[in-house]
Amino acid sequence: MSAQTRYLDKPWLPYYPPGVSPTVPVPNISIPQAFDEATERYGAKTALVFYGRKVTFAELRDQVDRLATALAALGVEKGETIGLHLLNSPQFVIAYFAALKVGAKVTAISPVYTSIEIRHQLTDSQATVLVGQDLLYDKVEKAGVALRHVILTSIEEYLPPLRKLMGRSVLGKWFGASRPLGTPGGHVWQFQALLKQHPPRPPVVKIDPQADVAALPYTGGTTSHPKGVILTHANLMACRAQVATLFPFEEGRETFLAFLPFFHIYGQVVLMLNGITNGATLVLFTTPDLEEILSAVETYQATAFYGVPTLYETLKDYEKTNRVNWKRLKVIGCGADTLHESTVKGWQQRTGAQILEGYGLTECSAVSHFNPYTRPKVGSFGVPVPNMLAAVIDPEGMEFLPPGEVGELILSGPNVMQGYWKSPEETSKALVTLVGQRWLRTGDLVRMDEEGYFHYIDRRKDLIKYKGHSVFAKEVEEVLYGHPQVKAAGVIGVPDPAAGALIKAVVVLQPEARGKVTEDEIRAYCSERLAPFKVPKLIEFRGEVPKTDVGKVSRRELREEFLEERAP
Image (cartoon, rainbow, N blue to C red; front, top):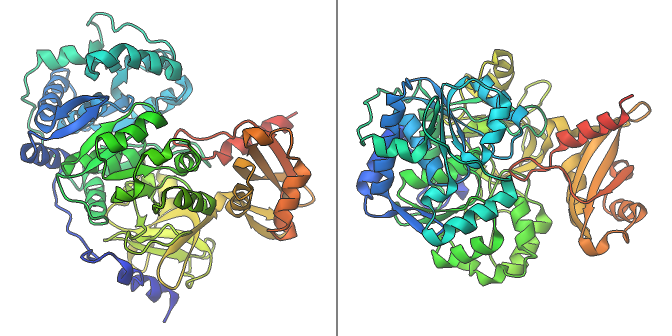
């Protein structure tokens, strides 16, 4: 059997949970249609919980329709781009679905972005309207982008009375001082005023799910600068259908904690879009307060918990983690970055529960792989979701590689993006045709085992070439994370004329070990577990490693910092 045939035969299918089909139907409807159907079906049910304030599906529908009516009145037309610069809140959910109802596309911007980063995304996406948080608006003004309309909202608008003062105080610590909303006029509008002034009668806009763009998220930029990813209504509806089959969820009966940021594709699709359109209750958090999150798991009897590796690494050692009966939850999911095996083992020892690691990209609408809850495999990010093909190819020659060999992961399915926004050259590099099918080149190095489970090795751009040897940064990091006194680590290759690249490890020690553990001790620890050519030649201790806004170690920033230090 050829390597190509091995992938096309989908060897992972025997390990799907009972009742999960290799293919699932994707309704040819727009996201607003899916939203309307859910809000009509679950009108009296709670859709959102915001620090105790509950919003029913009927109330959510009313406010979405009012804002959509207001956007139309402000002249927003089909195809325009609306920027969302908001924390997780009812306003984000309302603005997202309202924008799609008028046929606009949404580009969500990280609340921690600088003015320069905000300017890039607003300008590049050609945004004409922004719905923003008042306490973040100073950075938007400094960005200096000409916007036709700005709609500002305050975090207190949906907080229960007793939480309003506390909420503003806590957020001020995270994001700085707020600014008054001021009076309506010019191009700046108040969110609540628009809702009150307009009836819930949005215009009827014809949306072609296959052709019309719904979202324009920007890539995380861990190895390069962010690019806009074109996702249609059909792409996102496909991912919704694929994810809905993976776990033993019952439509209209689930409760999800939504602390993962909605501006990121993981939180936006897996939690917000899938949750709302499937009748789930979302318990929203603007900031990741561990004590409040743990309390909410029990208070609201959450049925699923989605996080990132750094959260689980923290929780496995957090004093109050045992407050939660983790075995009760249907799913404890993890994505957005590599889940280290030391974290999995520590979590299992602490809670007795299994973390299900998955994999996805912005370019595939959030999800491409999952670990079957009936047969998870530690150290693997699982098997492809229904309707999706995955394969491993030689990054240079594009030939299919047999199971067990390391190569580049490619993906084919209805959730794969249309391309990069205004970047035809980047699109042609990423989307290729093989065996008569359209594939996404992910840039990730992986291997598939004989059972069809995939294992992450590293980003192709993070492969370090030391004296002709190939060294994977992730492999070195995995060893470092196994050291009992190492809290975090990032590994990069730095240019060296004699070796090609030297392996550098940036290490964050546990507080009690700082100033006590030496570079030689770390190097000796690695030498016992790695081949000599993989042992870091350079070790730097720091108080923290740079991370992206969703908690990934940013190797790009580490490389840039090194080059800046060496610049003449």
